[in-house]
Image (cartoon, rainbow, N blue to C red; front, side, top):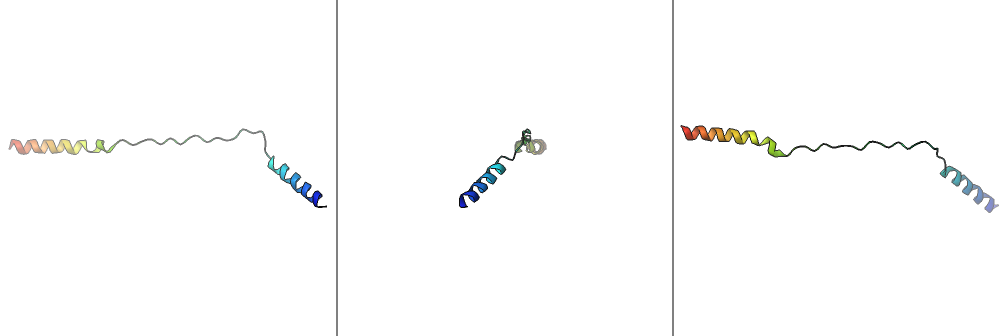
Length: 60
């Protein structure tokens, strides 16, 4: 009796393990992260203004 129950349990487990279909798997597109530019871009304008102010102070 134990062998019959064990055989039934193994049969049930094997049949549910192969419960798939032949449909193609859905593959999501990779996430593309655009890198931001460095912080040196934000410092150019203040440096130019500092040079202009320094030139104005030196000229007066």
